Image (cartoon, rainbow, N blue to C red; front, side):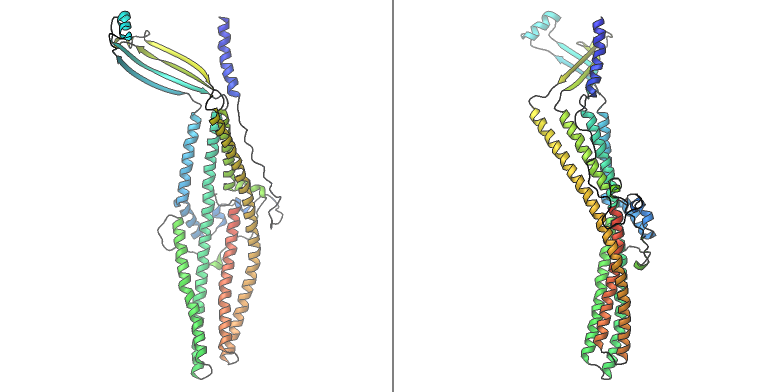
Length: 472
């Protein structure tokens, strides 16, 4: 009796001891050689970054805010990413349920009448006095695999990492959407500004053409002058349908992002009235690991791959399964519910060690380790890519500010040159070629200035996205 009591205590103790064993490496974030500071960035005063701003605070234009909200709600990629979260959530629930035992209910009835000349028939006739055998069974079975090597724990860890990765994937899609919508919107404002420039220059060409025609009528210039001025006017006119085409295509692209049919896009401001802060703190490179969704998703990808390597390793070790069963059983229907006579119970526990398929399991383990190594390489690449993108955006902002100042000063110079050329042309001190040259230079200068201004805004948007802003 004492020995039975000791065995009763030792069995659960052994199960608990085995369950505490765990194979596979515990996850640690891969080491990243991050610089102390971003290139082309001043020494930050603290860890704050523009990526901490919600996109509604970064963009103050109400029309743009409405467009971004609408796109986030209806974009196809965003909706697919949300479905990926639902799938990952179902897998996570399943991984949690793996710790619970399997419970099944079964009911069966069988009737067997062997040949009276067969061994079974003779045996039944001698012992039971009949050759007709019936069997009725109803019961529940419980099967429970003890997580000896942490296989199910690793499966749960992988499912949790997949779920977080899916959530970060949604955030990554949103940051991309916010950046894409804002980029498309500011491109539209630039095209609007360039269209206005082209139309204004077309009107200016009209006045110069009239002046040239009058001078030809009084013999002060030739037909060649009229033709060249008219060609200049046609060049300005050619820009208008080209810009209108680009505007329509850009509007359609924005509508596609928001899952809408092609149509016009409302704008509530002009390019020159856009307000984007010049205070663009980048913080420290270390902040990218916690702010940028694609980097965080890469980290979770490594964690999931590490857990799956643990699952593959645990599959090579013995598995301990406990089976319990209870119910009613009788070989005649009349005695089926004769309780307690028809009650039965079973208990079985055993270790199963894979032998012949061990090579296959080892191969799966080696492949899982390779996938883990690949995910680490991809994570390291994503971190370096993120740092590079921030540095690129910082230098773009800095140099585009300088270009904008030069371009605006050049436009003022060309405006003065055109004014002087027109006055000199009216007084006969300059010919039409000087006027044409001055006007053509001004047109190109204004177009370039608007493009540089737009590119400066786009560089700020890219910096915001590269730092991980846009998902809040």
